[in-house]
Each structure stands twice: as structure tokens, then as C-alpha cells.
Amino acid sequence: PVESSMKTYVGALMASAALFASSGAFMMAPSSLIPAALSSSRHAVSPASRMHGRFAPTLRPARRTAAAAAAGDVQMGVLDDILARKQKEVAALKESMPDDAAELLGKTTKHKNTFLKAIKKPKGTISVVGQMKVKQPNIGQFSDIPAPDFLSAHMYEAGAAACSMCCDKETYGFDYSDVAAVYKQQLRYKGNFPGPLPILAHDFFIDECQLAVAAAQGAKAVNLNVALYKGDTEMLKGLLASTDKLGMDAVVEVHNKEELDMAVAAGAQIIGVCNRNMDTFELITESCSDTREWLKPFEETVFALVKDIPAGILPVAMGGVNETITAWTLRDEGYSSIIVGEAIVRGSEMRMSTGPYQSAYNEAKGLIMAFRSKGSRKYGPTGTGSFYGKGEGAKETLGMISI
Image 1 (cartoon, rainbow, N blue to C red):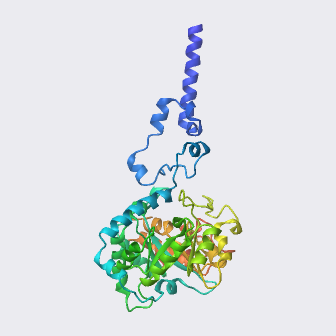
Image 2: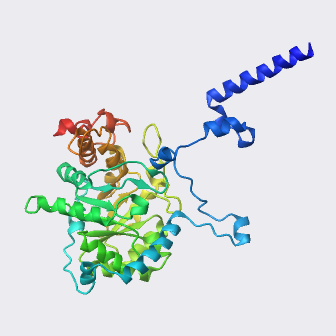
Image 3: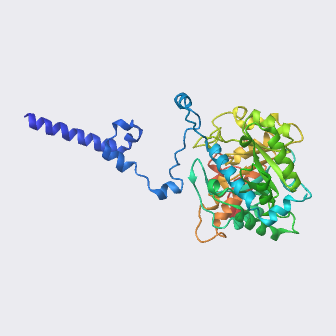
């Protein structure tokens, strides 16, 4: 009887364990309670899956714990890692400057404010800067763009005001050869109205030699991330002066009020308010996964900094601007332009099949049209409406109908 009872008890335990595992509930259980066999089988992640962003890469803690501080163990954030790498890259670049970039450093290029004029819009309207990247630190690789120059052509046709190329290969997946390819594509529109889209080079700039490389490849503007400069206003002033000398505009990226004050003090003409934590690259203000709307009122988001930007400085919104209703809200709150990256990139390959001329690229066009449309926040679409054609702005979103 005892043996029979034990068999029954063990059988019941095994059945319960099987049900527990099949339900996936053990995924939420403490690791100490997960059987080793189950843990190794259910948590195995293939390198390919991790590479393409299905599983976000593990980030190191962005802040030091008390124990780590006491032990002198400094934990760096993502931006600190990038800064250390860029300092080494700049040292190497100065040893072997490309001839065209070195030539630009030796002269003053007439500044025409090409980028600023392209993105500046009257109150009540907003311009779209289409950004291209295929990966970022917090999620890994999330997409693939086989032909960024062709995608830039669709951005032009959709009415984008400018094109942003993320050109730090290790962080975003593109480099300055892609900037040159997009610049060559845009030159085809010279003589048209509007003319070629000006290119914003989005890199981690800490020295004028990097700025010269960007200018030599065709960039008309650069992104200066204030978080890189650790409160050094003079460094930012110097980079702004070098940018102006090279004939380019600068989008000065800020993430809080302190950085905004520094940008204003340095003389920024364009300020980009970025909804991203530079320690982790996660969004500061997240959106609901179902409605795609912010989890906080606008007044409590980082974008509310627009109210503190002095008159005469152009405000730009960046970071997590992936929905039409978000774009229209930012427009109504005073932003002149938005930089949209991931939404356009993902839209460009929603139905990628045989090549860059297929309907998938038209989906990216539709998104840009929807962002630019003079839609109403009150009667506009829900979050998912911008992808599935429901509500106001649907005809712009469904790019195949639009063209």
C-alpha cells in the first residue's frame, strides 16, 4: 500500500509539473524553483533569434549600486561605453584623416541653413524627418534595409522634409558609405521643387574631425548629443562653431531641463527633445502596447520641455514617435518637426518580398503622409488605426491607395 501510494503521489507531481511547464507559468517563477531540465530547454535562445531582436540583449546596470560604489566597481551606461569607443576612434581618425574631410577643415564653407529651412514649418503644421537605422542598443537588430538610398527616394516622394542617417555602424548598423549613397540618390532631385532632402548625420560627435567627415559625405546637419559632453558648455559651443564653419546645421539633442539650459546657453538654433534614457536607450516615457498612447499626460512627459524652449529656437521631437496621434499631439503642443525612425523602417519591410520597389516601401510612404496630415487629435485614429486604415488619416496611411 505504501509503494502504491508513493507511485500515485509521484505520478501526481509529474502531471502537475507537466501542466506547469506547458502553461509557461514557470517563466514567472523564481529561478530557484525552476527544474534544471526545464530551465535549460525552455530558456535556450538561438544566436540568430537574439541577433534579430526577438530577444533584447541584456544591458548592464546603468547606475552603481551602493556595494559596487564602496568596492570601487564602476558600472558604465550604454552612452559611456559609446563615448569611450568614440574617443579611440577619433584618435585613430586624426592619424589618417580622409583628404576631402581634411580639406574642409582648412576652409570656411558658406552656411545656407539648408536643413533648418527644410524642417521649419508654420504653427499648426509639422515636418517629418525620416530616420534610417536597423538596430539600437536596447533591442539589438530589429530590421534590415537592403537599399537605404531607395528608401530615401520614397521618403522624398512621401513629402518628408529631410532624411536622418544613423551612421555609427556598431550602434545603428549604418556608416558614412550609406550617407554617401543616400546623398547621391537625393542629388537626382536637384532642380526639382522641393529639392533634394538634406541629410542629418546622426552619430556621437565629440570632435570637429568627425564633423568634417560627415560634411564630406554630403550631410547638411549633424546631431549633437548634450549627454555626451557631461555639462561642458564650452565643448558644445566649440562643436557648434565647427559645425557652422563646415556649412552645416546642428540638432542639439537634450533629455532633461538641465541639458536644455546648456543647449540654450551654448547658442543652439535647433533643439531636439529626445524621449530616451541615454544610460539604457530605453524610452523615458513609454507608450501602452495596445493603444500606442503615452502612459502619462503630455505635461508629465519629457516632450513638455517644449514650453521651456525660447522663441526663435526650432523645437524638434525625437524618440518613440511612432504613431499618427503622437505626431499630431506634438504638432499641437508646439513642435515644428519630428524625427521618426523605427516606425518607418518597420513599415518599409512589413510586406517586403522581392525588392525595394514593392508595396512594403509604400507602407513607409503612407506613414509619413499620415504623420504630416492635418488630422485632428480628437477625431483621429487609435494607435493601431494608423497601421490598419481605421479613422481619420487612414487614406494617407494606406500608401498603396495614396499613390
